[in-house]
Length: 99
Length: 323
Image (cartoon, rainbow over all chains, first blue to last red; front, top):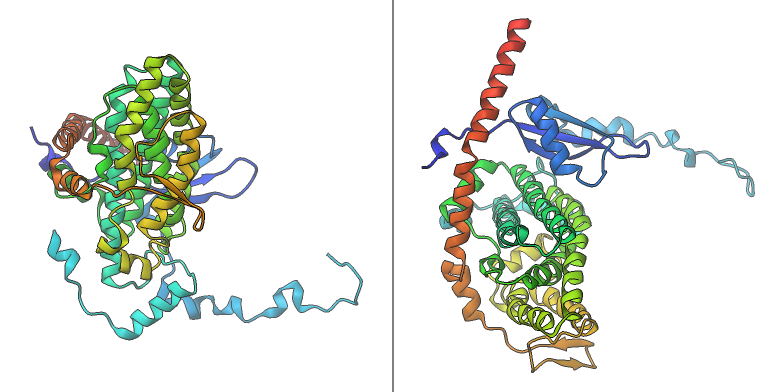
């Protein structure tokens, strides 16, 4: 018996894991699941078999809004041309430790 | 399937040059970035074959879960097989970022039109084969995947980093099985040696054809997908494995093997490529059995997928009713 005709692909969810030790959630990969509860369980089974996570977020992939490579230049420019936002911009007398 | 991977549209030379400059600078290519169609197709081909290999790779070992000699061995083997399922999913997930659907890739595997690593078309006829697979097959996979963890395509490289962390457990549990058997009774030692004899050459073939006979290698290396050649990786694996075999008193089945002082390489005899191509083309000892097992598992799991979909639909309805 072939089930291919009855098989609809399940929705895609992005998986974010928070590692132990206080770091932020980080993208780990994705899973297919019918609903959010199963998405969480699948994310645990696929991405956290060895204590990699203390917390998991799953987000429907279609709900994520992302910047595009095309607007990479102008979009990020305001953050790239302000050297005075970095500590290295400021002069410190020789031999003094400020930070 | 073949025409799609052979014929690709001509690319805009300016964009292609920019793309290749990015690769040369060591930048990572991400899913939404512009990429040549050939790059995308080569990645889909390579990554889906890799994912299929992880999935089919569960079958030869699944064969021994119910017959493991102790509870400790059984727990390890189950955890390892579960990891292989996970590895398949990591790579399918990476492949989907290239605009294909996992569902379609799985249907290609079930239809027999997709390839997977030929090593899994050999039978596992003794318990020692669980040792040899972990030691040699996973050992060879680590050499290959450590290289792929630096691949130019971000989602593939990141999946490999995750996989490499887990593979060392696979290799060590296999080597432990071989160590214990080799140091056991004469019968157990013979079982370990027999297993090494059967798995040695197929393991060397896992790295693929010689560089001169590998049709895809040029493009893959130019675009930073493969950073070492098949022959380089194979030699690295051999050099590493010779000392391991010696340490546990097993003999590599190659009388022609010699250490070359000048290159510090263990030189090995010619590989029987006729056998390799026979298995790749579908005529190995277990090709049909592996696919039949996958199809059965897929069909037997249909009710689970249907139930999941029905449950999800019901949840949506009740949420909407409450709103």
